[in-house]
Image (cartoon, rainbow, N blue to C red; front, side, top):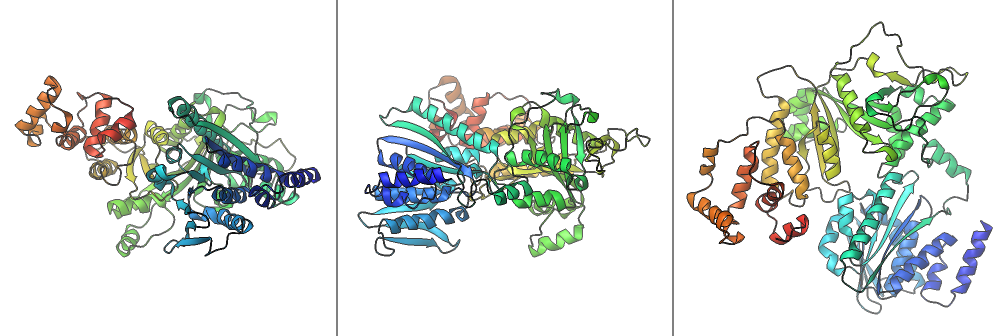
Length: 635
């Protein structure tokens, strides 16, 4: 620590008199901070270069302070339009505090050299207007607003970038300097998997931008890691105890004892929470293993996550492990972990009463949301399981382990696995011989445990194309998509259901009724609320609703009820003769799109690309320029 302090003092001494850097660097507390601030200042000073700098660290290392001082330096260097974005304005308290400290060091006085403009409704700083030499502005934007202001940006600062959905994050990048920060560990840090994904996205963007950019400006990508703590001393036992207590110790990549086994050989077990949180030494190691897996893919870890797993009566933990000999004294590899919750079985009259009063009741997320969306209190009477999180270890993703875990869970709930009352093992004594201390078994064999009778499995998540395809592949159907959700950091909330086995009946099931009603609403709102959804995602949503859904077919002769003979004539000349332009048939495309996708004919005469164009222009009301850019087509 003394060596780091000496390096900091020497650095401050060497740049003394180099304003505005010297006064700003003198405010830093560690050599890491000072070095990061100089890197940002260098990027700001060299206007001929376009720099993207990623700043990551654990909590309490001074990231926000560095960004605040770097923004003050950018203002001193004459940047006129500085924008900052974050998942929520609450993430920016430290940033603005050190921005104003930087202004004070630069001898800027409030209401003389700059003024602060606050948002009166949401109570946060919306804009800082500087007028000491010329008009300059530091403006806060929500992530969804950045796309509309790209032509004005000189410098963009992104706080807690890992908490921003991947598609939204890609839209933030552009031909300007970008400073990015992300907390990668600690009790408000994002998971390691998300930090790696963030860096990979930046590398892909810079590579593609360097290939397609014809300008003379060079592009630079840098990563800075702050390791020296400020809030704690180096190797502080308080910080170590806190991370250990909250199971947030950084876990290095484990060496799998079983390698990558065939998913068909892996088994799903229920974790006994009483044993897991018993305080036993081996239980603690197993808890760290499981929670470390959950934390690795969470966009923002919180102590509440651990408390929820420990105390919530309706919550359960399940893990997928390879074939394992429990007598050898090693803990099994955790390939995949699920955090689930029992929901439903609510009184219909209680739900109806609260819906009429417009009250929002906490708990039982899916029953309340679906009952309110479809105005159907009877749905809350059904019993279901909500999959809160499913996590596969980052090193073995896309190998079928998540799908295997879901299939086993569904299989057991359908009672396809025989319940053997004279089972040889009532429970798996996986930790029996590890220690002399006697504890209850941690893993319970699901094949020897009866489940409650379930009507459905459900999941709620922020809509992204890969996530939607994963749940669709595993037999889930979309029944809800939130509208007006631009201000949510998690994106548009999507709910998908997978009904459990029902008795054979000629009647249409409740899930088919919901899918049909959702499809009607979805088509009507595609040009309004859902216009910004990527067309590939829209096409997959339509195909998901279409799967095995009956009763939406039109006969071919019914098409004439929607298109006139003049319309058919124009389409003929456009397709066969190529004698007229697309603008002549532009008014037909909305009707043609609705007939095509509502009718659900199993055989379509359109190619995949033509289907995407029909959705974009006919249903989402996008312009030809927008479609050309999104689909990367020339004509």
